[in-house]
Every structure is written in structure tokens, then in C-alpha cells.
Length: 311
Length: 311
Image 1 (cartoon, helix red, strand yellow):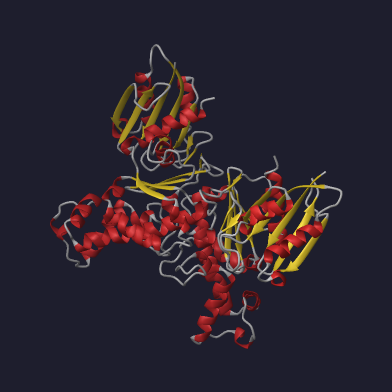
Image 2: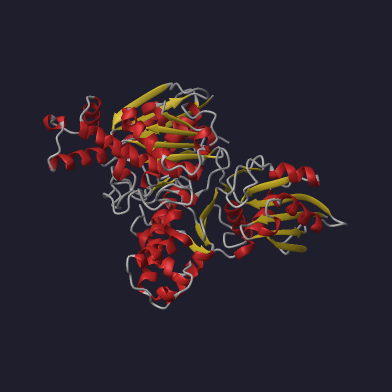
């Protein structure tokens, strides 16, 4: 029976799983720290895939969720910050050659969107916008029942829409992108800057300020911490208003760790969204919800991709 | 032989044309001032269509470009500023009932995009972003060879992406949308505000300041006029950077009167775009060009729509 191997290459872990022809429960599953294979990731990945390969069953395809930017048509990784040896790296072709099966590659945020659409919070929707808010902000869009890629597969970069002209620098080096205003590090940076200029906060006694610590402090009523989430939520609301006007989705799915902070973020997001809408009709058939697949979204998206591409 | 009637309902003119089974030259064509039918637009429109109806040939469909927002699935106009009697108005169904043929309705900017894609500057592209910059800013997107509509047909409103938080009010009543920063009236408003606060400009001697007068003054070297176009171009560049990150199109088409101002607008647009791009790859296979169908874009889009929907 036709099995599929799905791979999710994350900043901290690589996950590889073998799936049967139906369902989303893996037959076997491996999880290794990405650091383990530093400088020789391809060989490490190939060894993991080999270790899962079934003796008795046929594997018909491999699906891979990788950090980008990458070309989903060719399976070539253009470059990716955490894996310096992968520059113009033909990941898809190399895996296909090694294992003798078709290999389908797409970026992690696109595949998380695809995973949520096929198996998670987005089931049944033809028009879906997915945002993952954590260390960065990634996006994936399903439009008319199809994952949006653009001409070279570089579309769907929703974290890099300009939101605040001349705003803080983004991880990509450009000013004022959404990611620079509403990701976890952006929330932390705002708190640190305000602390440096003397703002009062319970976080002064915290050893390590990260987005989770800010969320904890905010839940206990800390003014600066609440302000930091309110600011991120405000800018997210602006961006989301734009996405609604552009895509008119029936569902907006928020994934990633920062989206777990609940009303701290969602309250200001909704408030800011309301101040920006062209027409209330954009909300009439819209569901706003958090992702339901958690850390499995990328892996299940890679599975969904391989199944969708099955001839 | 199967003919098609195309209709373009504009703020100043209504155009109705009869087309044969092939080509884009109308067999017959009418153009009437929209004002002529004030308060009874539907009856006037129906009379124009009837006057074009061929005696000997079969008409298989009517395509209509209308101001929106509207529902392209049902052909119902939700409301439209210039035609107060059309609120939740079933334009498509009423025309279909009157003439006994399928009627396909979509909004004017979407159909201008479709027209440019099938017959104009966008031929051969699968991923196209169209912006029309005139009294307002409208948009239309072709993604994976399909016009993007969204769940209720309200997508593609590219003029209403938030660009400047707390910026000037848009025609839709919301602050800081692209249309409020880069449309013709936005350019004029900026000049007038600067004039009111004492800025020097040759436009002081001009009876009526409109976007064309500002463009003329800018071409003669007027500092304030050049500044007004530079400002609009800057904000357009921010928006376009976002559209490239979102859609990764292979062509960006700029239509509408303000886009005719050439380098006055396009220079600053390109400069600002460059400061915002996540990756230079977004420009590698991108054509930026002006629209080629002029005032015919909506009519030809309505024709293209009716032909695409032909069973």
C-alpha cells in the first residue's frame, strides 16, 4: 500500500514521519535536534528518512516543509538563515535521486497553512489566511481552494508587508514590516527599549525577558507588558484588515507561540481591525481562530502536499 | 453565431457594446452619460442593451463591469456611491430575466485587470497585479491564472490596504489607506494643505487644482507639485512591496489617469519599493508597466468574463 514520508525541517528540531495511505497518525516518527547535524544536514536528514523506510510497503512520495525562501516548483532552497550550507541547494532533486520517489518541497508557513486547511482548523474553507506569529511572522494563503505561490513560489510572505513607514528594522533588514512590529522578538524589543528609558515594570526582576515572560507579566496586570501586547495587536489588526480587503477569506487562522497569548493580543487586534475595515461585510462570514495542529502543522502540511500531488 | 454584449457602468459614462464570437472590435457600440439616467439607471441600461441587440445573430451572454462592492456569484450590487437607488440591487438576475441570457457581473477594477490580462498588457502572465490610480485606487489580481475573488467576491480591494497608521481619512472613512495617500484627490489635498500653510507654488495662480494641474506644474519644476507626486509614489512603493511579497506576480500593471504621470510617480514608487523588498528575487522576473487598454479595459474585461464563463 502506498505510504508517504513527511519531513519538517525546523530551527530547533527536524521531524520525519511515515504515514499510511489514509489518516494523519504516523506509522513511525522521529524527532532530532537540528543542531545534531550542523554542517551536514542533508546527510543527517537522508539517514533519518532511510531509518523510517518500510521494508514491506511502497513509499510513493516524500513531502518536505523547509524554511525558505525556496522554489516549490524545482525544490531548490535559495538560502535560509539557520542552515548556512544550503544556498541554491537542490533539496528536492537530491532527495528524489537518493530515494527514487517524487519529492515535493514547500516552505514551512505555506505547509502549515495547507496542514490546517486539510486536517485542522481550516477544513472546509476555500479562502483561508494563515499567520504564524512566533520568532518571525510567516503566512500562507489558500485562495479558491489552492495554495497561493506566485510566479516563483515567493508569495504568501505576509510577515513582510510594510505597516509602519520608517518603523523598526525587520529581520530582513527593511523598516516597518509587520514582523518587526508584532513578532515575539518585536514585543520583547519594545519592552526592553521602554525599560531602558525608565518605564516601570515587574519585568525588571526577570532574568530573561522573552515573549512568554512578557505575556505572564501582562496577565498579572503589568502595565508595560500589556502595552507591548496592545501595540503588537494594533499593528496585527492593521495588517489583517489589509489581508481581509485583499483576500476576503472565510477563515483567519493564527498559529505560533505568540498567538497563544489569547486576548492580550486578540483583543487589541480585533479593536484595531474594526477601525480599518472598508465594509463590515468582511466580517460577516469570517471565522477568526487559533491553529489546531500545534507543532504538527508543518509535518501534516508536508503530508497533505505529497497526497495532493499524488498522480 | 454566438455574440456577446458587454457593459461598463462608469461614474461619468455608461458604455454598451456588441461583440462577435472572436476578437475585440465591437460590432456596435454606445456611450451615454451616466447622468442621463439619474434615478432610473436600470431602465436606461436595459434600453441601451435592447438597442444593440442583433436581429439576425444569437446573443449568448451579457458581461457587466459595475462599481462595487458587489457579489460576483449572484450579480447583486451591495451598494455603490454614485448610484443611490442600487442598494442590494439584483442587477445580474434582473438583466437575465429581461433578456433571457446568462449575465455575468463583476466589479470594474477586477474586470479591468481581467481585460488587461486577456487582451492587454498582461497577456501570457499567470500572476498579475493590477492597480488603477485615479479618483480612487482599485485593484485586481490574477493568481495562478484566475481572478482572485475571495469568499464573498470582496477581495482585490488593493486601494484599501492600511499604509500609514493614523494617516489621512480615506473615501471609505478609515484612516491611512493607500487610496487616501496616493489617489488623484490625495495628491491634490496634500498640495492644498501645503498651500494653505503658505508653501510656495506656481499652482497659486491656477483656478482649479486637480491632479493633472499638479502633474503639469511638477513637469515645469514646481517644488511643491513634485513633492506631492514623490509622496504619493513613496506610499505606492510601500504598498507595491507588500503586494509583491504577498502575490509574487510576474507583472504589475498601473492603470488610471494618475498612472499616466510617468516618472513623476514611477520614479519615487520604484525608489521606495527598493527600500522595502525582502529579497531582490521579487524583481528578477517582474515587469512593471502601464495599462494598455485605456478606457476600454472595463468593457473588454466584461467581454472576457462572458467568454470565460461560456459553457
